[in-house]
Image (cartoon, rainbow, N blue to C red):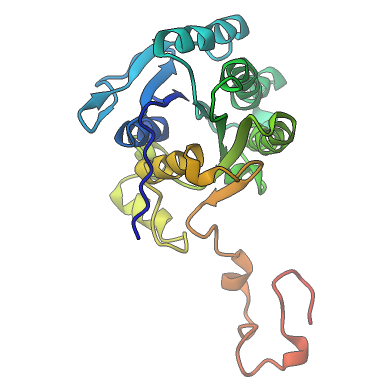
Length: 277
């Protein structure tokens, strides 16, 4: 049985959709037949295109609440409505907490938490009127699920984003569904800045149980699914897209026998949490 995800006739906005993960998401929506609007402060070069179709670009500074509130009615008027918002824009430089002023960390929270909140509130006014209901997809991060030294404000913002999505899902049901994709490492055009050359990227990928970084197209496919009718009963969910996560450090650091080896008596086998069972 084949699974066809057809978004023909639907309109999607992807914030930060001009490059990297955002461009991968935009291309996936184009391939599924949707009309796609990407927004960022600067236009994409080259334009974001797939399946012989090109995404529409509209400039937008997501830190400008007035501009954001005006943006979504304009999109709906120009394209006949809005069916899906993907809150993808975000990011952070590497900054240890004590090495810069609180104001710099605050700007990270503004971009990664407050801007998606502002965009979602503005989009809701349009999404809730769609005959089949609307969809909001938050692009989260594993940085919000574990300690995130060097990107602590970013991790805190992403943790808040996931919680925000769950509350939105309850408040806005049944008209608008809200879900989060919690991403691990993704191979984009900027991967070399974070992980080094091809050997470095491969070494980092080897730490992931699936043995590699995710591709932007795979993130896009998951977004298309969440926006489709196949996910009609999914709201308030957090979908982990991290390739299996991170191998626990204690497994490599331990000098005793592996917890499940026959030499360890059953009554003292370790469950990985620090307790025995």
